[in-house]
Amino acid sequence: HDAWNTKHIRRLVELYTPDVVFWTNWGGLDNGPRTITGREELLRHLAANRDNADCTTRVMSFRLDGVTGRASAHLDVRDPRTGLRHVGSYRQVLTFAGEKIARLEEYHDASAMGAFRQYIVAVG
Image 1 (spheres, helix red, strand yellow):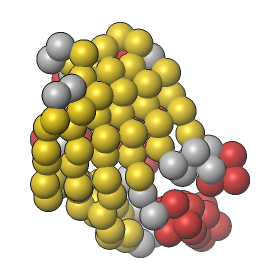
Image 2: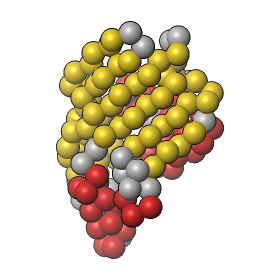
Image 3: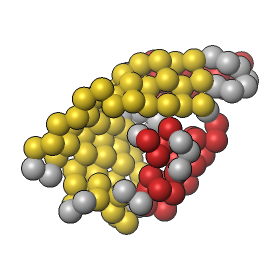
């Protein structure tokens, strides 16, 4: 989260295995689930999103059980063109391989995130 908030995307992706799987419950077709596989594809995705919005995250809680981590995080995203903001919370489930993240699942309020994205596209 620190790397994301300080816009160090390359440092962020170094935390993941080369064959990482990133899954989120929104952002795909019709705001359905989306899966990104591999560090390079994840880098492209994160860099594109990082450049299109002012976004910060903050971990509210984290628990590690073996190779599985569970986090609750706060999200504050602002569209720089319109000034519109979306604030909310989301959950993460991380699976570790050694000291790297091999799988990351994110669970957002998919309808709220989709509506925010759709609205800023419509007014932007």
